[in-house]
Image (cartoon, rainbow, N blue to C red):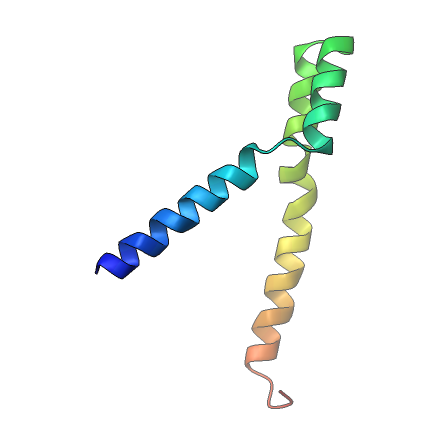
Length: 72
C-alpha cells in the first residue's frame, strides 16, 4: 500500500512540475493578454482543450480497434 501512495505522490509531483514549467504557450498567452486583454489570453489558454480532443478521440478509436484485432 505504501508503494502505491509513493508512486501516486511521485506522479503528482512530476505532473505538477511539468504543468507549471514555462513554455511557448505560456509566453504566447502572456504576450497576447498584455497586448489585447484578458479574454484573448483566456482564448489562447483554452485552445489546447479544443485542439487536443480530436487527437485523443482518434487515438482511443485506433487503440480500441487494435485490442480486438488478431494482427498484433
